[in-house]
Image 1 (cartoon, rainbow, N blue to C red):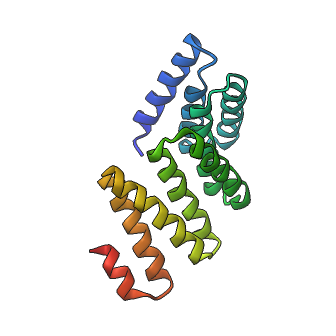
Image 2 (cartoon, rainbow, N blue to C red):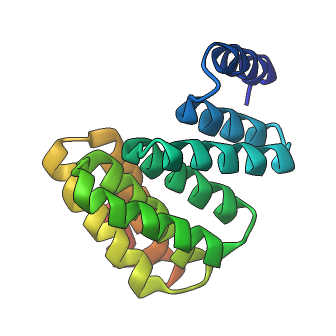
Length: 168
């Protein structure tokens, strides 16, 4: 990661929060920026702040994004149970918001948790669900990424023929 870009992102997000300190999405983005910088305690605190603001304002779209970021944050920290909890919250919320792209992202991200704990069936199930949505939305970049994850999952269990199908 280019440290100049990350530092610039941090500055821009802090400036945005000076203008509007109730901007939940900016706190969430700043949290993920600090996560990239290795400032994990700051990242978690900023996610908590973002969550409080979004909940106080009934900002459900922001909540879904924040749940996704919490899931990513905790997955990277190898706190898989917490990660799954937040991805599940986001998935449940997306069923009412009908943002199919975010729903597919949450499913895709959830699959990674199950891959980390060795539950291949759930990993593949979540990947299949996300692929169906990405395909319908014609989100080819996301679909390609999901196919790569699927291939890696099959390769990991020794199903090389299935893996090759997704690598092609």
